Image 1: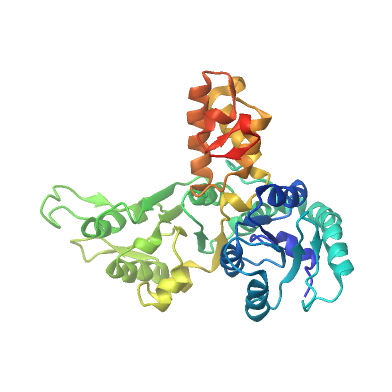
Image 2 (image 1 turned 180 degrees about the vertical axis):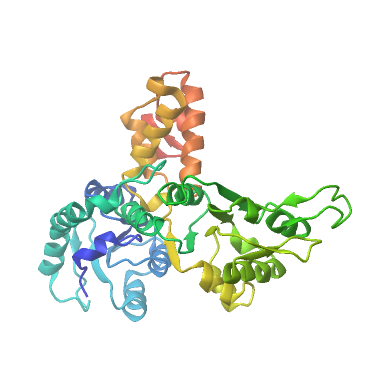
Length: 388
């Protein structure tokens, strides 16, 4: 199965380059990143298999000399486990060829597919440009983020529950805030509660409120966060950390639109739009009976997945420039060499890590231009991008 043009828009990488040779990886990845095609890299055979399992890759560039596994063994595993993926084998010069025994019979067709991506991408992006407009407060124009922008704008005008998923530091709260700002509820409040930051014993009181004397220390009545979101949006951050008992109470509110404060038998009708976010796989937790399945389905009516920064290509440059100017204004400058280091980094901490790296680098640069040595990312400029 060759890569279709629409694969370009998948939030996962459409292309993976597996090689221990950094120069080879860079040479191939630059071609795709320059066209904003979602591409990722793997350092060996095992790394490539792991990335294939976690992505929707359609084309793998595989080095013929892997540091950990035999290439033929990797090809057999891919053939058995990932029948929809095509493979191009890299020779010692980094030039791609089709493996002799591979099921894909037409190398020329593969190369034509690759060359056609950019044209297909440009046409599709132009047709969908109004929907891909960036969200308020967010920076990023990569294909996977354009999809996030479109999805958020589509759902903003509805009261449909939204579940935002993604790793820590990818900007889930920013997306929730943007959806609220673009919604008819924008004039009302967006109330945020971090389900992981409040002890279980206090979470119910925080969410639903309590009356005077409801428990020791309740010297006056308190309006809960749900009630405070009346007419607006309730954002439940890290909802996967919510205790089971609270999940049942939240489900009742979502179903009936009613809350009952601690210490009171009186119920109140509350109209609040629900947006939830999590960095864990709620569907897996539901299958393991660690999260209520019925609550999961009610929260995830409209899921939006945020990609890690490593998959966002040229967005690293845009975000780095944005943070530099936001922190230091016109004094926030980044050299071309430092920008190359930033774009090669894998960003396990995502956008939040990038922001902290830029903030620290600006201090070390003493209001001058940020150089590679200010970044603290383990690269030395004078050795020709050699890792230490």
